Image (cartoon, rainbow, N blue to C red; front, side):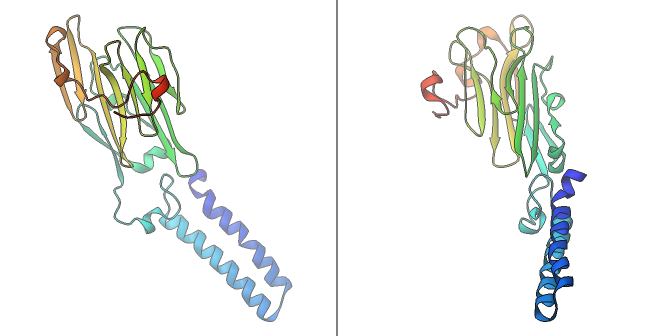
Length: 225
């Protein structure tokens, strides 16, 4: 709560400065300082009433028709209140894949921006940290690669097939596309709100998500197809 109201509180405290100058002055000077104090306090009140910890102090006033929900498309569609982003949203249980191989946590405030953590389990191994506090890291299996920009991160296997994509579309839509193991001979394929299951030997390129980036990633960092 204190994080949400620090902006109007700061404006209120700043408003005490012209209040003190008004007490020390007289005539027109006093009226001008009192007006400045009243204006700062009025803005502070508006920022509290119309503010949003995620979108900013005057978000509701400047964008009255904007959606109040964030949507994640991960084998279905799950909505969350946008304000919940200020404390962070754990999407793990919203991503409908057997065994929960993907762990995704997203947080945002208007003063600090986005913060994202992303882990994934590859072929029964311990979780690999792909992203921590927006910093891409982690050791991938041999021959695999990872590429990313400000709105998406993608992991491809040794054949260049996309294994995981997390995509931010517009401001508050998140798409998770992935291909993971489903038993000894099967795979689970998730593309946005759709999820399907196939045998590994019947998997075709049409079943997979479309590759987003160019590879190898080192000379093509952030370059889309």
